[in-house]
Image (cartoon, rainbow, N blue to C red; front, side):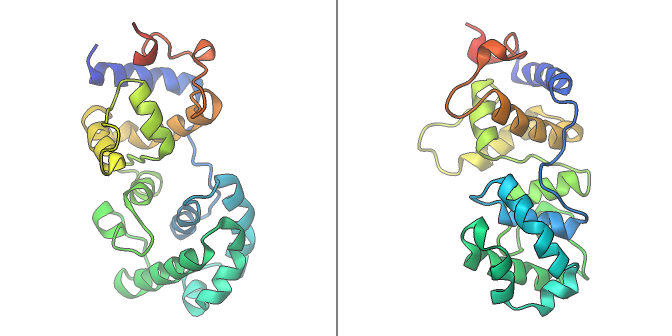
Length: 214
């Protein structure tokens, strides 16, 4: 079985296992999703979802964020960790979106990564969830599970493993499936293929996952 064939089989099986391939972050518009993803760095989605209702009530749109001080934004996101740098990034990206992008969240990875605090993982998620294009989101779940499944591989200690895995995924996962596939990987990583232990005995991917094919 080639990697592309294995990927196709896994995609179809995971559609059955996790039919609702949704982002776990709560948001109402592209800007809110962008800010929520920035907050999720080294923080759980659960925690972010507890913080953002009050944050977005106080700052309901781009202008409100641009008019706020970095310090005031920081007061609303303290529990997310690294709130000083995150508040600066949120303020900076909001001003940049207003001044350089006409108030619209950019729709390409190349433009999104120019925003403060936005890397390729965040950019891919915005492209996939907001604009319906390529969404190859590589987080810790994807790094771990894609290698267990035999879809990707990086050497121990290799620099920038996330980018290398993203480039490998682009060769075997159709763009039209990319965003949903990445959301399902996160769900799978939380439910069965955890960092501590892969619960293979309870997994419906046994016959297509390389970890279980001897």
